[in-house]
Length: 104
Length: 250
Image (tube, rainbow over all chains, first blue to last red; front, side, top):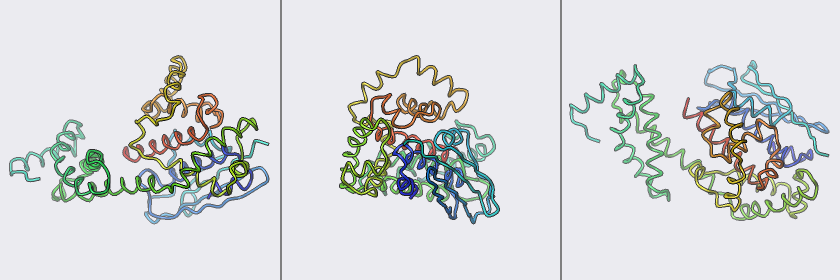
């Protein structure tokens, strides 16, 4: 899905791959290693030279809304997207990441 | 899995000790004592085209998790507790593997063809091509390109340690200089030491260049003399393995 949107904005293969890695990584940070019961909703916000993806997890397990981000996840996210924020939202853990289009 | 009363009592004592001490040698004893159960359950899955040895490994992993989580105070028999955990691990193995093998032939072929298309376009353009450019050059739709790229990420965990069979394998390991390796190792010792260090040199180098040096996949491909698609595949596999590990550690 993310790859489809990204390619529509003219992202290069490298950028599409980065975005895919980023979304995998944030979702992993939200559900944790053991997984959680629930849904993660994603919103794609397209601009001429950037793609923002916002996500909110709604989980029924009552385990809290704080995403758990390992040092490695942080390092990976910093390398593949231009901006990334993970936070505890009211309904559940949430994230926003931005990938800018570089190549002409 | 029949233990006599004496053995049963001995195991119960070990479980109680292990619950408080978390002593590794006790854990090893408990796992060894119940390997018969793991093998028995693994055998029930042998008609699905997977070698028994692999299945026993998977079952042993489930057994290990069960030993770790078992609470002897609850009065439940360990085998009763462990069976669903081990069967769950075996089923998950088939589910993960199932995803890897169900890639249609048409998509696999396109994936192979795209490797060459991406390489020549990257050279021609001097940058990573867009999905649209790849689609045009390969005379297929953008959706098909995305699907074929995705197919490259369908991995098998068991194949991680095996050679990929690519021609670049030998030349690449020869290219990884010892000086670079030392630098990489020292950097990761400070930050993410054991996680990255477990990978073979090639994967370690790729993880380092992408996530620590900030090179793009195409740049890494150029630096290491392999295709971008191959870099993508190796990265996806390495990340999947890191996550599986986080799961096992938790």
